[in-house]
Length: 78
Image 1: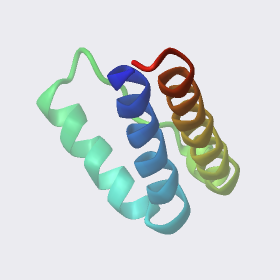
Image 2: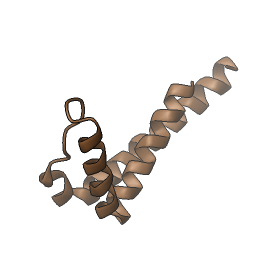
Image 3: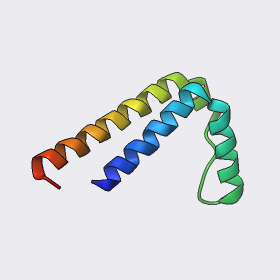
Image 4: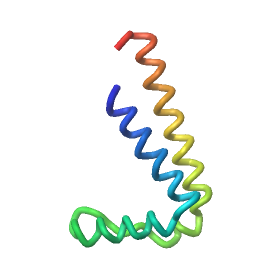
């Protein structure tokens, strides 16, 4: 279940950054791109134009992942 919780935390943090601090997310993306040029890719400018929808979607995905992890832990006592 740790992978669901980890993915939920990452999605929640990214969603909050998209909504409240897109410049910080863009700077973080630029740092990652300079560090690992072949593996990562820059976040497209179209994503920043739709940042409110993307941020809300990521927060909803995080909530769903947390719920699934909670449900599985309660049902199967993991």
